[in-house]
Image (cartoon, rainbow, N blue to C red):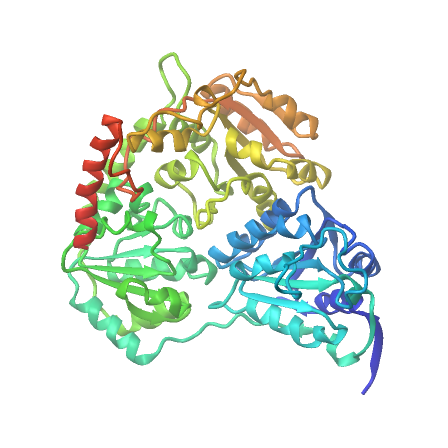
Length: 607
């Protein structure tokens, strides 16, 4: 057997460089790196050695580097991914939030975190977390609850097994998620005689599992017995590449559909059978259809509480729940009749099993009425005062084209965009599984890296921008252009409205109700400009539209700041969301809110 002598770090990078997709592209497109004493000497040297085979990019924060990588993988429909490497202490634990985000969204992310010395000679080393009762614990054990696969590399030859396992997880449609490889820093530098065959190019194929014939027959029978079925399309439909199949299935059988946050954009908004969004952030047309549905057919969805209105939207007492999902864990939730299979394959097989079975087209008046209502709330204001978030969305919508991708993650805008935004197919990117503040700017960069031709519009509130904005500098340095629409409502307007809706007093959300000595006056234009972005302030909705059009010509990020009113919601749509209200309180508003809460819970328990 021929061997080649390499350090463990060199072997890892060399191996990753020859792991390809069916399109002959590297599965791991590149590695985001912030070096520290736990990875700079070993892995850093290896990345430099193989810099022409696997690119290394420098970011500003470990969490946001990972956000960019996650957005890239999501946009690439999990067909390609990125890696992130950190040092052993705070660099590693900074990644835990991003790992949870990838885990919840079922997205591939390879995290290569420096670790303590396997030989333990210099213990305790700088940044080492010591467990008084377990000598094997390090900071990287924090990842175990939020990754799909965890391994600690304490010997150079461990790579021979752990690396194939890692990519097997990341390319498995059912088990896909983040991987953490805790790479002991002394082991990174140790040499080993690796088999040359280990470095032969390898192709990873994304499987398309076929449905079990018995499950397929059960689901087909359930559908044939239904009189008013409705499809709920989730992110799995997009990951599968089943968008066209989904439309064909709906049209052939006359079944209306709606799209979750992760599934929005699977179908062009102008498709007549597309009723929009369901649930808490849903529209009237979709929620009305789901309330009447006697069968709800989920396609690649987890049936999260926002989708189901905390299980009050599917109101028909006799309704059945059917779930097409590649993961059995998701397919069997809430007693659903499961069809465990790839979404595209499942829809094709189910359509064949249904044959000519079809349902009468629904009355289109509900859909038309819904879009008339949203036109009204998104229209440009004709009175004095600050614009609403809905009016900001309307301004961006009027400037959108077929290549526009609206993206967001947390705060007011995810709900408003789900309710109001009208995307072309592929024109929506929302991280709402974890709804992680700080994803937006880095995520926009990741989308643009995956889709250079796209017109990426990043919606972000001032609160989320303040949490994580530094990858704006990275996008400037790498000349990755996208447009940031920064709505400044002077605090956390979304949660302030929720607080008030639960009967609470305004407290600690908007700056005006926070315990501060001086109300802040943050110059977001100057801040973004200091990182090299083109930054301006829009003086109203008409000015915002003009500045969005101008931004498309630039080769660096553009940040457009606009002041907004923190109090109005979208003004249309929506459903109940189960947020527990205190049973007892000195506030009359809370006790009244509790009465309403109990009434809604009664509907929930009945379903």
